[in-house]
Image 1 (cartoon, rainbow, N blue to C red):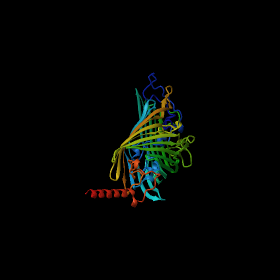
Image 2 (cartoon, helix red, strand yellow):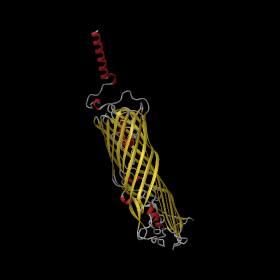
Image 3 (tube, helix red, strand yellow):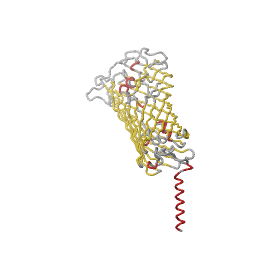
Image 4 (cartoon, rainbow, N blue to C red):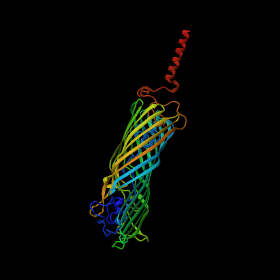
Length: 553
């Protein structure tokens, strides 16, 4: 149930919020009575718990992936490999560090006709980090098994919502006001250590541990006032604050395989994430005043709080499949991401497993013990299938451009939709450039998204003026400017290994040698460096040329 419906569901009936009806109804819908003095209709606010409303990838992370639409499962081998596919760590040949920063982000949200014809809308900005990664090659063991360690710190979902609704009606001596504010700051930080190994030049595997810290801070306020003279006044106000956090764990595994000299295939799997620790606080205040009340408890001040809530964070199993192809100066990549469904469960409970708490009056006495405050928040997901497509073009060895497209569909079930948990499908475009230095790479990019879907709203009954639950159209637009890069730590290896991507430099993530120059995997192994055949051949040619010059003299 929505916070809006719980906060105002049983108060006086209301006039048309967008203006008076054309049919000379005036304000006759206002009834001189209070529907119910019970707490069930006065203070039943939904807790401001949200988690991207069932969306998996609001924006791609990683210096290269953020400019290629997030397509990275088959080609990743930089600091974000533990996040996308830990098998890519096996292709790392140099120690390095990489990072991305979403330098500036703007998000615009709107729910059309949230109350009557009044819109709920907001405009927010954000500055937050996208990812930080470190990779360390461990050398070669078992003959030709090359392996490496890496750790990534990733912020794959950052949400900052600030929306408002203000509506006022005035006619003669009658005044009506409705003001609504909602603020939500939510993010998840994942720390992901990983290991990857390549068995020869074409087959790599990896594993990772996902440790996530999720936090959410919400503020909700509602004020409604009606005045038609000294003897006919009504006012209601409600405020709610929440602070939630949880620590969750998941495991990851992946592989990368090169069936052809210019083709890589990738698969990665993240297990369901489960909560191992949580903390939650909620404070709710509600007051009402009515000069026409017929019951003694119609005017009141109520308070409800709990500083020991349990938060249950769950994420379903996710499977990623990807392919990367090198065609001359082009690198093409595409991924398909599948998140399995998740059955409904209660995400917020008291320390003893309940979903209600008892409100108190100003003197600390229980109020309406038969109607406790509902703080429970049901959660769940439907199956989600998203795609990521990206391309990179090399103008030279030091300059490349990238572009991409991605989807971020919502798995929010229709019966769990409210104003903080809408069902919005996002479509995103990315673009950027990559510049290579002597020992570093720099990326500059932009991410733009458009979201269309549905949210919670209320309509006004033309006969009674009562609020009625309904589905409202919702949309959101966002744009993020990103800056990222990677740098090599230590000296480069004396001789690059065949069929391996450039060490820890994210662009271009393609073999250092051209496909036609790569060694046939079925051919005989190359001799040791001290017996390099190409060096012998070059030396022999020089002797022949020298002998010919002597003969001509």
